[in-house]
Image 1 (spheres, one colour):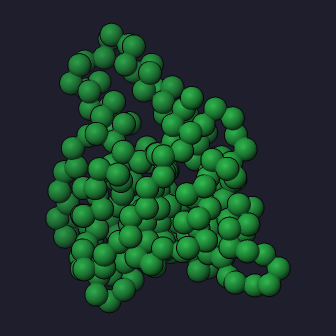
Image 2 (spheres, rainbow, N blue to C red):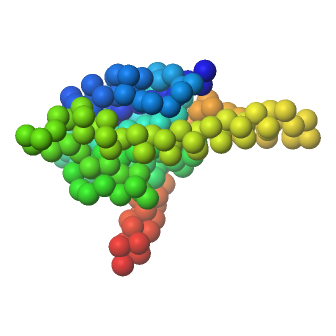
Length: 201
């Protein structure tokens, strides 16, 4: 049975989303999968680097992150969105699938899911049980492909051992995190904003 490590990061966790994720095995219909679920309540007095160094983040397969996580004025290390943090995260851990929960409309192409808004017709848990599976399905398929790739790399004796170790470390999330300077972060965020601006026309 394959295990998927799933991490939810939020400064004020959505109770309904937490309940859904905590009982994902119950709601998820795909066979042959087991979920290890971790919730990280983010402390806005800390900065992005504390998350990048967190072993639960490094070894995650799927991360669900709130779009407004770093928009609190007390957050250190600059003010930017969950989408922008996703961009930074994937510089270090390109094989982690990131789903952003947003106050705005869903955007499947960008892995952005609308946050539940209370109404009388549907509970929050049932809402997430309805909308999340397609995002999770897509992420899980990519993770399976990464694992097949890792197996092929591991079995290929023609790879140089140091390069093989680096590639496998990146795929498994055990590759050491190299510190980014503030200038590096600013450059990455600036690039992200330019890309988003061109996409939005």
